[in-house]
Length: 143
Image (cartoon, rainbow, N blue to C red; front, side):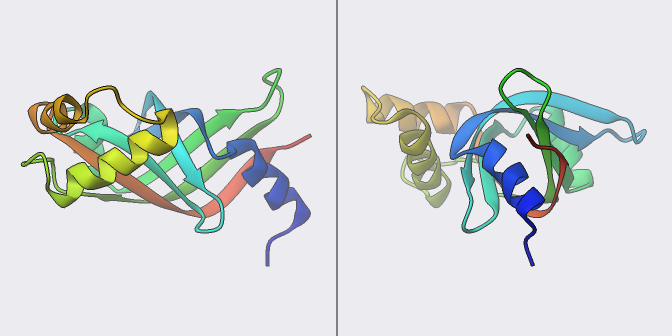
């Protein structure tokens, strides 16, 4: 059952925004990265485009527990979403399922791209993949 407090925390995530993704380094300390994300409230899930070569990706492959921190207006309210990450395969072809999912994410976050052919090729070149996290728990301080 969702409490009113949990609903207010989820509301801080909105549909999309910039948040701080927290993964765990091999020594157990947090590794933080600012990311652009899309949040699907009915599904309790957020998605992020990441690259196969970054520290956060290596951390997730080793330990899929992640958190996403967002701040409310003025910085005094905040929400943290905890969950277990799922990674798509890296983009290998401009029309593979990973690139198709990245196109949908881009459209949700930024609208139409001026050159979809270039976008698709860059997803493969950058070895991009889709991080999907189903939120298991919210905590924080909501106004």
